[in-house]
Image (cartoon, rainbow, N blue to C red):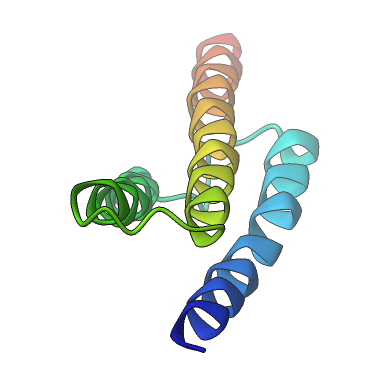
Length: 93
């Protein structure tokens, strides 16, 4: 039963990331985004993945950790894209 709750927790966290990605894509600015926050989220998911693998506790929950890691990675890439856009706009002004 613990795995069901853990999976539900990861899914709840993961639901918000596609919305954040959409907002990052449309806004085309890094303003309001925090690079340390994104890095710490990625680190947390990486540690969760590592825990599952090292503890030989590989279940379906691992899929959700990996999925969330990949989704947050997309948001991180968009952060850098948007930061470059911000710099170009500032240079043009």
